[in-house]
Figure 1 (cartoon, rainbow, N blue to C red):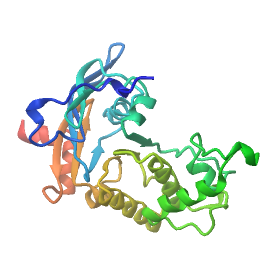
Figure 2 (figure 1 turned 90 degrees about the horizontal axis):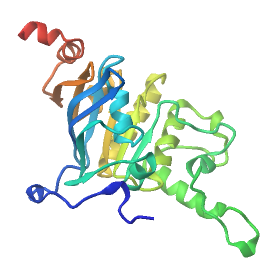
Figure 3 (figure 1 turned 120 degrees about the vertical axis):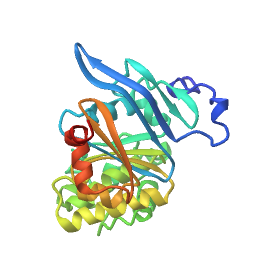
Figure 4 (figure 1 turned 90 degrees about the vertical axis):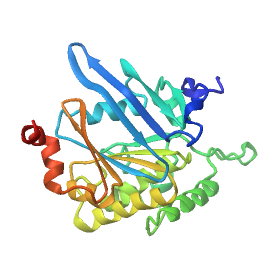
Length: 268
């Protein structure tokens, strides 16, 4: 196996003064047949920063996330991490570089408990001399460490996740991504279908990811949540990045205008 997952190349020396962004996309485009899904998109994200990606259905958000997570390959453009050019050949390569995605469906096994869900596919094996396939004790210790790190409250680690609240389930899905200590976490609609209190729990989780100096990219339709948690907001429309706002520098109406194209009609 290569020691250079994702085909990482040497850092760009012109960026050595600031070390390069955690993630940077330059002029990324993606086509599906004759359909343009992304057109020359620029995007950057720093450590300890929460960036929200917003836009109506068909704006290109999902395709952009698939490019960043290694599911899709851009037809043109470049992706850089920490000042070095990368090509993500697969989700495995993305994970090896520290990029993990938590999709909206969470992909949890409701009949398994929190520990088994956290380590699903990356279980810790026990010693052969014990005749045990898994080291449950080590998994529980690591699970408690990760859950406590994000203040995810679960009464019992042995409770099947099907019986937990929506906020707790989202917390487990996010913590599962943290088992491998990623640099960048992509969250797809993390507060969708949650009640007010559960949404507040998830927004607090996102804030704790920032405190852990991780980069967080949040895809959301909830503009109120976006305004509360994001340091920057990137607006997509028809596959193109049309606007970018920093915290406190915009109103809800300005965000909606950028998403719908009304700002172009006003300034055109």
